[in-house]
Amino acid sequence: MNQRFLDELDLKRAYIFDLDGTLADSEKLQWKAHKEVLKDMFNINLDDQHIFSYLGMADILVLKQIEKDFNIDMGGEKGYEKYSKKRVKTAAKLVLKEAEPFPFVPRILDGKLGAKWFLVTAQNPKLVNKLLKKWDYLRYFNIDNTFICDANHNKMFYYDYIKAKLVKNTEPGEIVLFEDVNKYLKEGKARDFMTVGIDNNFGNEKLVADYIIKPSEDEVYKYEAPKEAPKAEVKEEPKAAPAEEAKPETTSEEKKAE
Image (cartoon, rainbow, N blue to C red; front, side):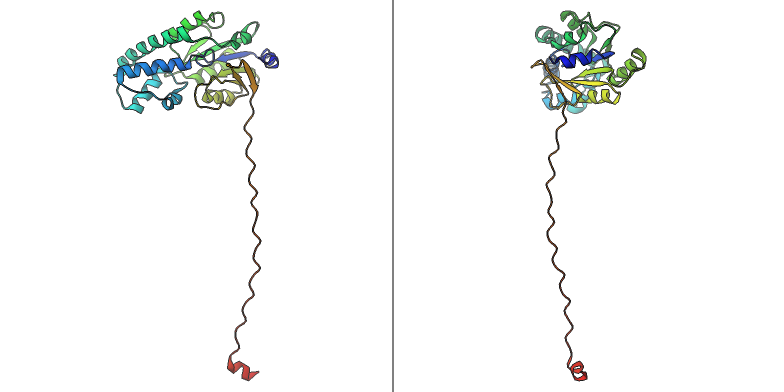
């Protein structure tokens, strides 16, 4: 990974990480679990178009949106709880077995004396704890710096809380947000965070951030906005010369007068 990028991060005061798709290649496995459980319980085929529209949402909000999109009733709070338990159990098996953390995270966090880091995720708290334990990431994230989103507390709530209460009096760019969803990268930028997009090859978004990390290549790139295509020059057609006014014909009476 680019050493200049790592050196720049050394100057920052705080780092905020998402979990799925940011700490590890686990996003697609979470949605694979959703697919399996929805098919089993409601005979619904969840397609990628719907999945991409749900990225980053808290679990309860995803379920309510699925009800609207597929015109089903999950049975209220008890139904949500039943579905969530089965989904979390399925996801835990998949993620704990298959997901591996991205190698760039320890490179960034190891040795960052004086800096703070936080985990802000919409994932189930029990599964979060199991994953952090498996990956040996409890040395970075614990109950004091891990925030779980719900229907009343979204990621933006925790961004504002971290900036106002936990890392006070920051200059623009002193807090770094690592995310794999444009919606939250944009929210981070609105709060003067330095933004790092994680291009994990899941989803259909072209990430917009200060830097882009491609874990599959173990590389980081400075974001470059796409250049606008030059506008075609419109040539004006030459204006036609004004037609001469036709002279009125001279009548026979006028000729006699002449």
